[in-house]
Image 1 (cartoon, one colour):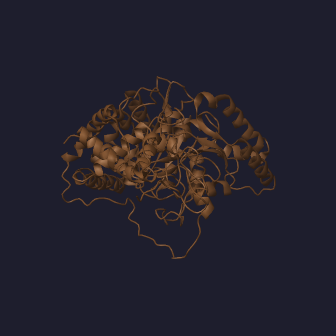
Image 2 (image 1 turned 90 degrees about the vertical axis):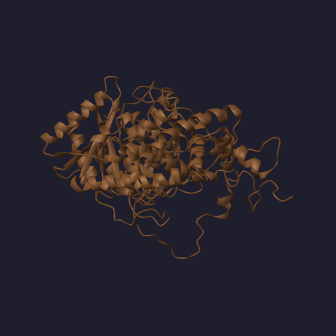
Image 3 (image 1 turned 90 degrees about the horizontal axis):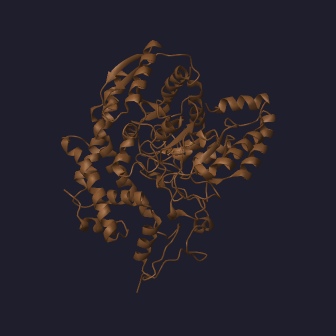
Length: 95
Length: 476
């Protein structure tokens, strides 16, 4: 199993990153080296092993369903790259 | 070699030292050396001095909090109201926190003073503090060397005597490896022990808040204030905190200490190996019961960790899209939303972050999910079971903290050799247990190295008690 240049472009597209041809080659090389190392896990038979999703087997807690305002509207908008007084502004998405 | 918080507190009570004096002393050091070492990316001089004056009054009245005298740097990964929060990344340049992280609330309410924000590897991804938009941080013990990472500048801020403590974060060893490289102490508490509200996420099933100081008692004092449930963080544990401050001063106790053979394999520097063997002999003389143990799945830790951590990172870092916050970049030849995302992320992230996002995206993508991510989750269980088995017969595990001392800037060019640095520290994150690195000695290359103790989940009292004893053996 090795990563092709097409794979690099495909995952870059999924991750919303742009890679040019020379970068793609360097990334391909890095990924193949790292994934080659990760192949080590194939040695292990894990047929009867349950995946570990939470290191602490603690019960899931829920909060009371009470409305709170952890952040004011003004604070929430404070770091927006582009906004009017009420909304975040983005480029037009509907033609 | 550095002054512990406790000693400073005693001097403050005896009035041989005043808090404003102490803070000004640190600020003087920062003024002289921060330019060369590139440790703090923001110095909060005025705030620190005025807080010192306020807290000095409380000390005079006998009303000061538990951390009066603790002057600390905060890794640039924590939210601190009205201060920048950038995670060493261009994509967050210009961001100002609108709230305080839970740890900031807890620290300042006990009269700790934040003196500045520490540089870091971008989004905590790195082991050398070379991957930051602000440029690399240098090791104060020798500026040709890295301070480790990703909390390298946090450790360096203590070693440079810019402050006496720091809060880093530990996902795969990010406080313990820098501690080993700078002759400081770094604690990775049990997963869930300290609230992560206000800690920017890298890999959520691993990330831990990491107290750092110059002695075991420093990190015990910090943990005492930081540990405990927080309703703002659902992953914080309801397990009641222990009495960590008392634990480090308790009378001598003999522990059953496991020596995991897998931590003494080929990659370990022979001088560090020899020194750890000496320490094991000291331990026997001091009355501890030493036992060889085996954690056979350790060799799969690195592969398992980098699959799971990059997968989680690729998902966590999807939020940086230039819409609600962050450094938006609009392409010159397009006005589409999709191209805005791509331009913002391509310009905003550095190479190592992109590499990990791409790797994480790959291992989660269709056709590869089961063979990488699914497989790694299963091996993670095997690694955790290794530890659970070991802790049935021993209290604590003792090992080197890192396979080598600090390396020189620019020395580790390929990513995999950088990742190999974390080989002794990341198993604790995979298993969710607690671990600490304390100074163990100096190498003939002049650089220090640490030893690591690991204990089971929520066994911090035992961990700190044992580490404090070894600190005493090694200090004379």
